[in-house]
Image 1 (cartoon, helix red, strand yellow):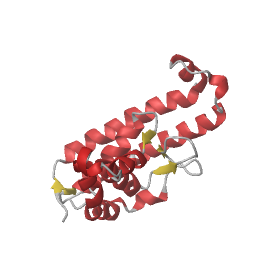
Image 2 (cartoon, helix red, strand yellow):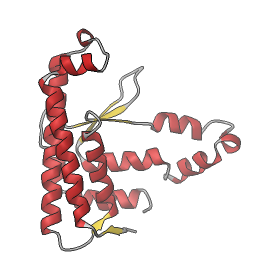
Image 3 (tube, helix red, strand yellow):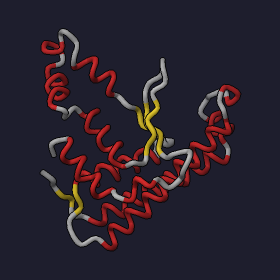
Image 4 (cartoon, helix red, strand yellow):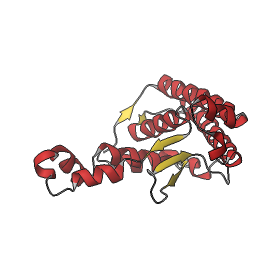
Length: 189
């Protein structure tokens, strides 16, 4: 079942959030050494060229998504599916969080499937088994955008990176309405 969010002004607000995030990502791409130093990291421990490419790709993706949201808000005639709103919120959040979102599913799954989960974490266990755990819903929204790359290197917390380094305007955004409907179906909303 698809529910709707009828406020097109909200889409314009999300587009503005994407643009603000893109501007910050551009600033980080222009001076990755300064950004890392300001945050207390040793810039010599990072591949600054790769960071510049990633931040630039994330900024381009955020801008492209903002453009899409403005187009949808100005030309759309019907209500906006909640799945599409969740996807737009996800892109806006990532754009304003350095282009990265943490994937908490491994930890959530371990908690929900632990032998004592029925005692200590019953709500997590029930939500996980129903496919409605917040980390599962977040993953559906992230995947539905087509705007992220999932990174899960050994020994590292898995995360999604906004933007594709091989293209700054993902083709997957061409059909976001269909993807949003699928996200609604996947999370039972």
